[in-house]
Length: 296
Image (cartoon, rainbow, N blue to C red; front, side):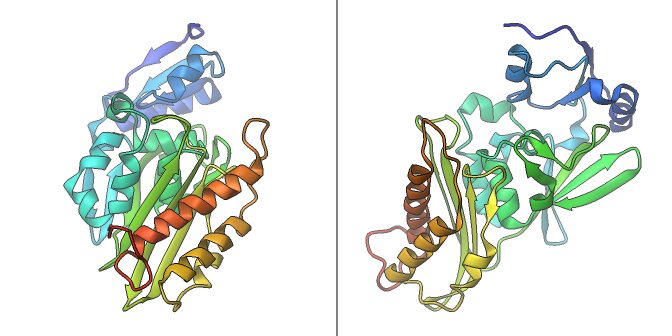
């Protein structure tokens, strides 16, 4: 199918883009990489009367470090995030997850801001932003504001972004010293949407957990950040038994979708397996964890 007729706008400044949004309101859609919106327009699930293209706004792209915070512009492509020396050094979980998005061609066009604004609960970047406690920098007619990622993502394809607002950048905390990380995702085929995904970061004091963050995607309307589960294992020995206990606790804390083609029980078992694999990676080298490779 072809999209419904629309007027195309390519503003040269951010102020011009915001003016167009204010003028056309709910009749307008912003397009960044187009990897989500374009297929929806082709299938006529989305029929904006006005399409506002942000690709002529280089000030919305780029990776910088500001006072110990990783700042990534909304128009930064997935490929740049995955391969950036800065991202890989200070926020390696984000780089690892970005490298798993779709196929190479998709990563060359898809953007960080587009992924967050689309708010697919199976997408990698909303999960990582929520797990790490990233903050979304939003700009609109009333100025700018920041929203924690977990509050920005409200439901399936529903966010805190108003119709006249644009995501300008995302601020990620840098990894703690000696922090380990792992990201595990499962889909039917390489490049398909995730059936489930798990993200973990940990800092070990000797052989015990001094810090632990756990995120799960693809099982609810929004990515799940299981702070309560993680808190219960701080101070625990990072051995094989604890890995099993954490994975069981994560599986018990979620209530996955129950669909005709993918049952809730299958997703829960899948999350348990993915979480076990992720935890084995972050605890590699600790007594009692055998046959794994250190990562992070």
